[in-house]
Length: 238
Image (cartoon, rainbow, N blue to C red):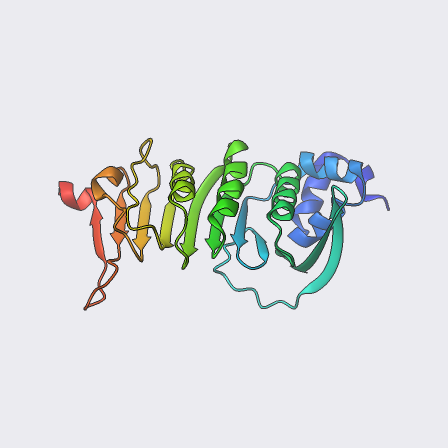
């Protein structure tokens, strides 16, 4: 039976019963197959996690562990070979040129529309993180969470631009990175995130500039008792 001959209203129900990997592979069958997915299939949330490999999770966070056995395979996007490991809800791109990460992300977001996004950058070069988050923002998607973590001191120019790209994040921003000693940041506009966490070296952080966030957690660079200082607008107003 040719699945694509079914009416769109029926296909919507069929796709609901399929896992993400199945729908992803169907998109490569033909141009018609991909167009049908664009019309009938929505992935509610994509989580992109950039580490040594590129991890893409559909419908869950990278923090939620998946113990499924992984399958290996290859697909081609724009004549570029993508070596993948997959589970039912996860794609892992087993190579790290940022151009392939961007190409894969663009393909997914063009195929599965109306998704919210969360982003995790762990040890990702600042220039690559900036390229990635700019590409997401250019598509005017709803980004709910951004985590940026780096043990290496990054360029002030790129860090400032990354933070500028985070002003529309809705739920949580977590920054845990080494910054240059003279780095100071002033947001170009108020941050929308409900929660902001700042860890590691935080001499750049001026609390007064971020008071639009409902909850702010700051971890001092060195502390003898290991406590976090937390403030919120609601507690100050009460």
